[in-house]
Each structure stands twice: as C-alpha cells, then as structure tokens.
Length: 327
Image (cartoon, rainbow, N blue to C red; front, side):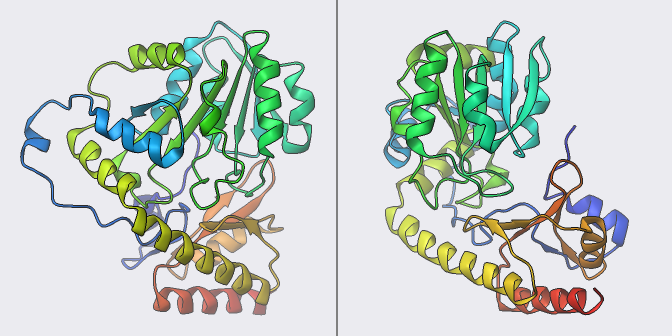
C-alpha cells in the first residue's frame, strides 16, 4: 500500500510526541463546522439522497454526479470497469492511481507532466491530477478537453482528479463531464477539511456512472456523511470566506519558506519542493513534533500543509530557522 500523510499513530510510535503539529495531509486546518445530526442519520440505512447530488452538481458545475465513499473508492473501482488497457498516469501524483491501475491486467506507466500530451496518442486511459498533488502543477483546461476527445474517439478515458481544485477552478473540466470518456473526481476532504467524512463525487456520462454505481454496490455513503456533505456544499458564504482565507494563508506559507531559502510550488492548501536531503528534513521536523509529508521516490521532496493558528506558525518558523542554521 502506498504511503500517505495523516498517519499520526505512526509518528507517535516512532517519535513519542503527544502534541503533534500535523502538516502532512494538505487539508484545510479550519474544517467546515458540521451541523448537529438528526438521530435517524445513524439509525436508517443510507438511501441515496438526490438533494445531496443536486447540491454537488451545483457546487462543482457538473451536469451529473455519483456520490462515493471518498474518491478513493472510485480510484479503486474504475480499473475494474475496463478490459486490460494501456494506462498513462501523471507523475508525480497521488500514488493510489498508479497503484490500482497497475492491477487487473492493465499496463500502467508513469509519465511526467510535460510528456502527457504525447502519451495520449499511445494510451487507452490517461490519469491526471489537476492541480497536481504534490507539486501543484496544472494542465490547461483546453488541453484536457482535447485529450478527452482524442481518447474517447477510440473508446478511451481521461480521468481527471480535481481533489485540490476548489480553491481555483480555472482549469476544472467538471462542467464538461457529459463528454464520452471524461471522468472527473472531486473530494470533500481537502477544501472543506472533512477527510474523515469519506465523501467524494464522480462526474461522468450516465452510462459510466451507472456501471460504477453497480460496481460499488449499495449504501456507499453513510447517512451522516450525506447530511454533512449537503450542508457544506450549499454554504456559499463559507465557500467565499474560506477561499479568501486559504489564499492568504498559502501566500504566507510560500513567503515563510522563501525567507528560509526554500523555493516551493503548490496550491493554497500546501507547498512542495524538491529537497536535497528529504529524510534529514523530515527527521528534523519530527524531532520537534512537526509531521510533514516525505516523498522518497520519483522527485524526492517535502510537502507542507497550512498551520492552524499563530502558535503553529511560530513553531514552524522556529523549526525552519533551526534547519537553515545547521545546513
């Protein structure tokens, strides 16, 4: 199983701190304030809530969507819906894509972002994280739509993971997901900071969504998750306030890193850089109770999420200063 952020039990087992500053997962540290749940949200089997799907279509601008138990569920199921195929997965990117497309008889290869356009001509499925996790790289919307049409003409798919697109939808293609062969994944975990709810959405044409729904089976999304998700997706005032706050915090983190000699890239929710000594940096931070995301393979580097409060900003700044002093 690929490594991920957010594994604080591992951090505590290895380093023993009780008071961790977790910057490893790239989530909004100020999560959506979930409403009180009605009692029957726990009691009843979770029937499909069409109002939740309507709220998702409105928020993401998609013509139709399927609610799933986090986009991870779709990432694992989509490879089971195709006969063995040639798969190109953007690199670097969220490791679960390549992991699951390399199974079920498929032939998967990692393709750097600048080479994705060429890979379209020699692949049956192309998977792109847009914006990319962990680097923040983006592919222009027009390119994605052209690739989708090229792949669809021979029965292929373009899978676009837009998990980090909520802060800037400039290149989103969710509104075009009725096109044959275009599949868009969206997540409630990152922008809303609700990773524990396990709720995501897939936008695609009706036939593919029906096949995915059948593959995933009944009661995919819990009643509490549906109730919370609908409230979060409909809260336009919270969306506006949060985009502004995250944009400011992202610029602040970029500036803090630059002040300590680190040139980073990323999004409003995280910063990433190719670190010459990533294991040493990771160890340095962990010894100070700061858990960051270490990338050992491919482009070796570090990813940091946003500190939640002023004390955490100061703690991070002190650790960065100490790191710079020992270099």
